[in-house]
Length: 474
Ligand code: SF4
Ligand code: SF4
Image 1 (cartoon, rainbow, N blue to C red):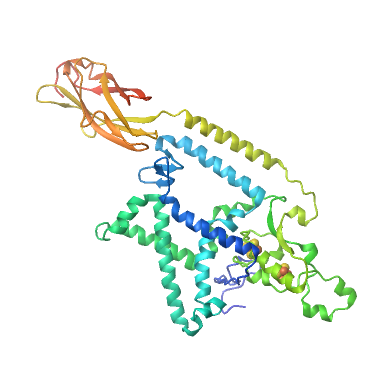
Image 2 (cartoon, rainbow, N blue to C red):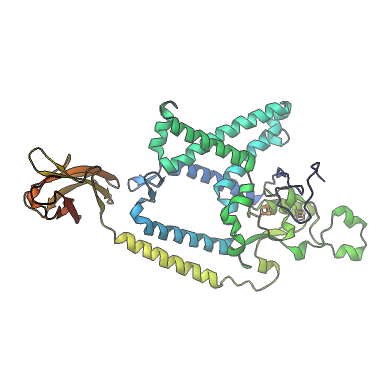
């Protein structure tokens, strides 16, 4: 019973909720076992990796940069531009099917071992909570039990804020790049108030997530978690409780009072609830596979330590599958295990083919901003054009630009050839001048030619605009 006056739910409610709808705060007890030790090592490798990726470069480009304002996504040395939507779609489709396959084979291995939400919550914020709680061994060693409740909460809050700012910097580095981020950090907030606001807002979001919202992200917000029921099948690897071996669950105290024939029927589960109090999403794995289970293996470690203590074999809770628990056929192959790789092969094949077939540079030619043409004091007509070049090669290139297709055409450009470093984009504005007499009904079709003197040559049809009627003004 809770103290609230709200009517209580009669059905099962979310594990993070009391029956009256109020928040049920989870403080999972840690059991350090073989899985936890492996997860700690992996988590700190991943924390290092998540932090380092924005600094890593591949083929002269950031390993991952999601430049949303410029609409350019750089992934593993390949930059996807707005014109590459199809390629990006193929890549995302291939990755999504890959995740489907991973889930069908190994269940929620991503959630339990590698998801940043779980990694930072369980291996950064939760340890701080335990260390500043005053009850654990390490907390006492640090003298936290000698500090008052308010003092411990202040220390915890300060550490949470520091971690949240660290995470906000890491997160934003994926979107703005480390160079821009270091500029933000070095300059005064008054020099870039908007960037400062973005940084503080992101840090506050991190604080709200890891300090308050926590495991509810996995339970109610993450779309991947919602899809589990369709992505898993009876042969997928799950963390499961061996019902046949564990039931009838009987506490040691109750066992002592039972008749021998009844005691023989007792299962291996001693109903100690260690698997429940350690669960970071607050569920009881003995109720069967549940949507809230993120496959973190904490209940395996907890139960194994109990089995060791009572002298029974480990593995009452273990990595298994629904079919294995039901003693059913354990075939690994099933249609989705064949269909998913086939789709991935097709999608990645198309993607590689499309990438190999791409030109060494992307060229976009646009009309200049403002009036379509201007008449110069010497009577000639000037068209302003904007040329954007994306150098997709690994080397710096210089692109020579020329215009052909009419008598007396003159191209005036601030820089020609235009240097474009490897893997970057440059744009320039240039003017094409010509006699008004060359226009036919106000237009002249020309060709803008670009080449880099090596393996790239491109002819781009373009229409110059001019006065209607030979020699006429605008
Ligand atoms: S049931 Fe076990 S594996 Fe699932 S979330 Fe809880 S502790 Fe982790
Ligand atoms: S930890 Fe193991 S023995 Fe204890 S309640 Fe859970 S399943 Fe039963």
